[in-house]
Amino acid sequence: MTEKNIKMIAENRQARHEYFILESIEAGIELSGTEVKSIRAGGVSLKEAWISIDENAEAWVKQMHIAPYEKGNIFNRNPLRERKLLMHKREIMRLYGQVKQGGLTLIPISMYFKDSKVKVQVGLCKGKKLYDKRDDAAKRDADRLIRRTLKERNS
Image (cartoon, rainbow, N blue to C red):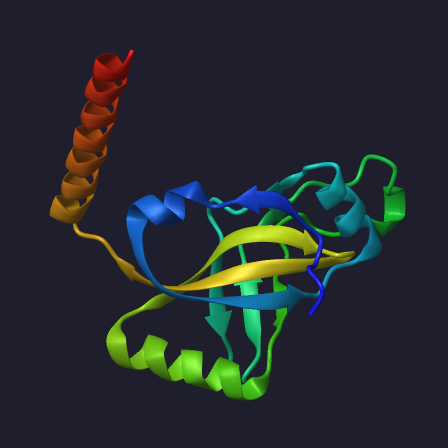
């Protein structure tokens, strides 16, 4: 199997802070031409984005901001419009069952080009409590301190 060319576009760093990511799935996304050009220019934000599944077993990304393309004039779309995710229906229904049953949520974790196609990494996530966030911060600080002391001893 050949290695695909992957170029990172945007990452939702806040999602890793706010949620435990239990599973991640790659999905395509339906975009217009000016949206793709705007994405290539770096005009995308996943910070407020989330994913919902409707009664027709279709997954939609909501609140993902893609800036209007500068030279797009009449072809530009609404920056916050809902965009359809391209996934198999069986996979969508499995995710829908897990979301409804376990109090989980679907969040776009990252967006990237895989060859010439735009892909979204969808995360099945569980919200962190405040004490979980504090534990993560304490672990990060401890790791940083350990690395710093090892660096000082070695040099």
